[in-house]
Length: 377
Image 1 (cartoon, rainbow, N blue to C red):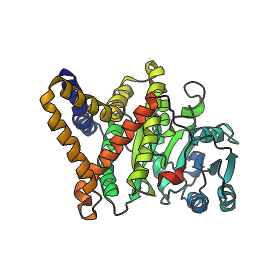
Image 2 (image 1 turned 90 degrees about the vertical axis):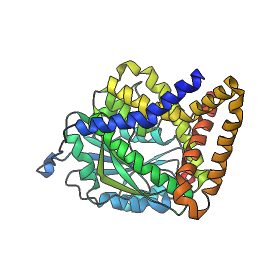
Image 3 (image 1 turned 60 degrees about the horizontal axis):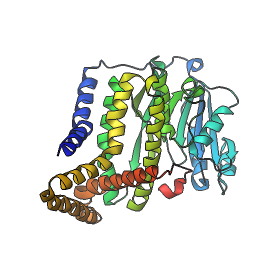
Image 4 (image 1 turned 45 degrees about the vertical axis):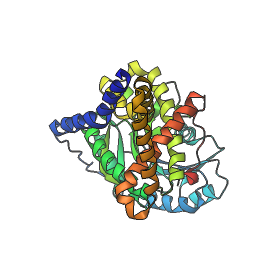
């Protein structure tokens, strides 16, 4: 019973009390403006990296969109082809991008190779996906917070085109919550992750990462705020900088994606633990409250359920009924008419299952390896 109570308290903290405290802290923080430069010369030189693997159908449009951005400063668009077997590289070159062609090494390793082999060190590195579409002002809005000396990285907002499915409806509900939470965290403290679809960081943040190189098994979405924090810099949210993407509609592909993300998350936890002493206290508190406990919550729920059953056998029937009811609700969420009501349950259950499978595989020695964007859509 004590184990279940402790786990219940941890879950209440990460899902209820911490978000409320973050909101209160954000409300007490004075608003901060981000003045734009007054001349073309004062805009930073930006290197935009677009990792791509077999993205021939999308990459030319992405490059043209990037090159058409209303950005007064110097912008170099580099497509990193990670072992593509189609015409990704040729399409990107024809559209006007610089192309780095590599064997299949994984997204983070591919991006780092492009960083280390840049023709000149940029002021800012921006990151985008091959299927993203940015409005013309997105880059200018994204870079505005970097004019503050205490900000090392910034994440934009992804607006999704949602399909008509229970999963997509659930993901939409999740996005509304997470967007508000990111805004609060970034106002008084720091984000603990950025969007791979639209984000940017100072070149100096990635110049000398912990351990000498960016760990290839880890996601840059987590590594960028981590490296900024190591330098005493914050990562903030710029909701006015928008990227448009299409949300996944298939539960099977969402599950596959969540397993991959879980493996990367648990590997990141080990990486962060090795460098824990070098991280600011505020970032460590936010990382544990907003990320680590959420990643572990499905496993903690299983442990709590087992503890209840073992401690009090009469709890066996209620626990089994609860699990059975969850399974029925998830099945019903596939019925289109019930998307809005049951979709969030389906999405939450899919995410939880993904993190449970991911933890099991991680404990058995599996580590994140490679990526295949087409399989994630």
